[in-house]
Each structure stands twice: as structure tokens, then as C-alpha cells.
Image 1 (tube, rainbow, N blue to C red):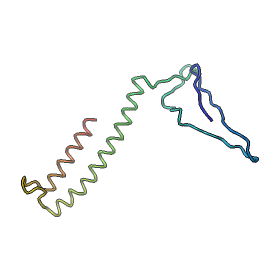
Image 2 (cartoon, rainbow, N blue to C red; image 1 turned 180 degrees about the horizontal axis):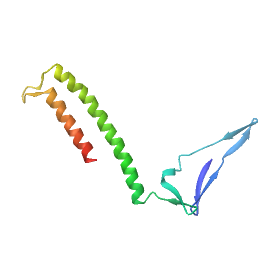
Image 3 (cartoon, helix red, strand yellow; image 1 turned 120 degrees about the vertical axis):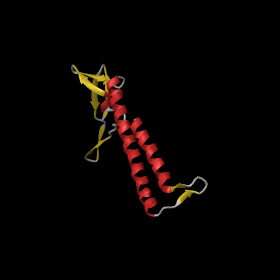
Image 4 (tube, helix red, strand yellow; image 1 turned 45 degrees about the horizontal axis):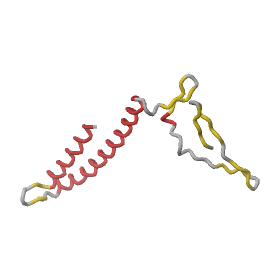
Length: 116
């Protein structure tokens, strides 16, 4: 099946052939993103350039970024627990401990989340 848009109307075509008493379908959905189109007054309209669509896409991207940053925070938090249980100095020159080091990393990640 392939999809074509002509005159703001969505057409779907089946690409198939009969082979050895069976129907083979060749389906490619990669060329059509349903989120970029909506039906208005019976016509298919491309909404990919509207500010509402762009805001929705940005919101989804930010949610993914926030989840990734939160996963990084969770991983560092586990290291902080170990740093509490086994206190040691990370950098002898500055006297910075691993707990302080990990806390700084988490504060930076939280700032990135707040900026989104």
C-alpha cells in the first residue's frame, strides 16, 4: 500500500501481486506521517508548518529530553549513595569529595531540566 496526496485528498493504493495462490503485499508506510495532517472540511490539510503543530512536536521532544536527564540523575544518585557510605576525596588538590562532585553533576542536570 502506498499513500499519495493529490489536491489535498489522501489516496491509498494497495501494491500487491498474486503469487503461488497467495497475495503478496508490499507495504511502505515510511513516506507518510499521520501527525502532520488532519481532515478539515472533508479535505486533508498539511499542518506541519502551523505553530500549534510545532509546539506539540517541541513538547514531545522536551518530554523525551527530560526523561533522559532524569535517568542520568537516577544513575548519579546511586553513585552518591556509595559516596555517602564510603567517603573519600576525589581531588586532593581541591579537597572535593565524590559526594560534592556527584551533587554538582545532579544540580547541573536539574538546571537543564528546568530550562526545558
